[in-house]
Amino acid sequence: MDYSTKISERMWNQPDKGELEAERENTFIDDIVQKAHIERELLSVLEGVENAFDGGAGCGRFSILLAKQGIRVTHFDISQPMIDKAKEIAEKEGVSERITFVKGSLEDLSAYGDRSFDLVMSFDSPISYTYPKQEEVIGELVRIAKKRIMISVSSRLGALPYMANPIQKNQFILDPDSKDPWVQWCIQSREQMIDAFYFEKEKLYKAYESGLLGDPEEAKQAYDRGEVPWSISYHFMPDELKGILKKHGVKNISLAGPGAYARTIPNEILVKIMKDPGQRKDFLEFCHKFDSDPYVCGMGKDNLFAKGEI
Ligand SMILES: C[S@@+](CC[C@H](N)C(=O)[O-])C[C@H]1O[C@@H](n2cnc3c(N)ncnc32)[C@H](O)[C@@H]1O
Image (cartoon, rainbow, N blue to C red; front, side, top):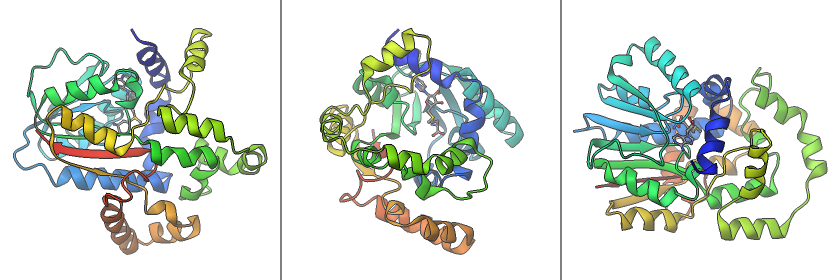
């Protein structure tokens, strides 16, 4: 097993992961924008889709959404706690009989035949966590897709600004009184993060060239010491992702960078918009339009979105 797979497994197997992930889009506005973008895309392509594969499906944000539309979904993930949380939510939503839960890693999709699923999807970066096999994994996901593929991977242009902004998540806090531990951490450590910040040109150039924001060697050593490092994550450039999909025969490819528009707006205004249901609906609709423009598609938050036909 590769280090990437082992590290991902250990990290995503943390017992509280499922619970934390299930709460995410209630706490941070950039997550709300990203989820709304993917939801809108998914719901617009379901005609003729009877079954779907969700690779790295987590706590079921999108697998359950599709099951609610009457689609049979294979919910595939490396982490048992995430699968358990997804099962719990699917039961509550009354759709568990339409979902097959499978524990496995994206690096091995040999159990599935060519063109097995009308729609293949994988959102919020599971593909990036398979570094250095990310290209092969995309090829395998295309192989098992019959009609469409829709993915989101870590975005290089979207993530590089984080390296010069350790307080970027503060811009997107919806409710500063939220009990969410990450929200409270962002608020409490804001000044300290600013004080400790130093613009490290070399690190930025290295990440820009390599697509790796951290050092895989450091992650491997931490893993060997028994620690729980963040998954090694490969960040794609827009043209690179498009090229890989094209090489594997995907047609009519388009990309988007969910979060690009929201990034330009200060927290006070974002919160105001989110608290008014009418403005919120209109805002999320416009974000989808703006973030799908090819000139900004790489500049979303940490995800680059791609869709295409087989
Ligand atoms: C950020 S979550 C996204 C979950 C879901 N796709 C969503 O958008 O809500 C990433 C998921 O990828 C899964 N994952 C990470 N590495 C994986 C791998 N190599 N194979 C399969 N799943 C993986 C994790 O367990 C986690 O559930």
